[in-house]
Image (cartoon, rainbow, N blue to C red; front, side):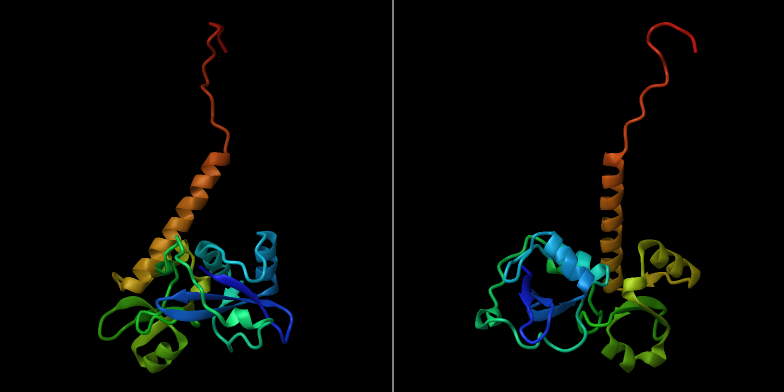
Length: 196
């Protein structure tokens, strides 16, 4: 499970978690810190991976940049990640190297016409093979579907399939929550025998 930590050498917080066997540091924007605190999460506390994913998807938690810097106490260097009920596979990752850094949706033109997700390093190595590159944080469910249609992309790799599944699940969750909050429309007929 992710753990919230506080910087020692500067104001702010960061999150450490394990994804695919690697320790990942997520930096937080001030808005992300506000959301974490509003959720009642304090420094040193573990929390569900779904909360981190929500912060990541909104751009309030990000992975690129330097490491955590100086930490407040020595215990924060210990990694005691217990099993999280939320799968680490819920995070989008680079199709080539599994990095979470600086992800973009790209349209590969060679050798096949296919949509993929690549990190900054892998994009740099393959820049001559793709036409479109959009930061993943800007790619919504409707944008993804529209781009695939507009660009005539019939093939998507496993990274895009997983991301599309995540977007579809988020959409369904929000739609279900919306439907629960709506009053049920009653029958339009009146049972007392009168005519309208």
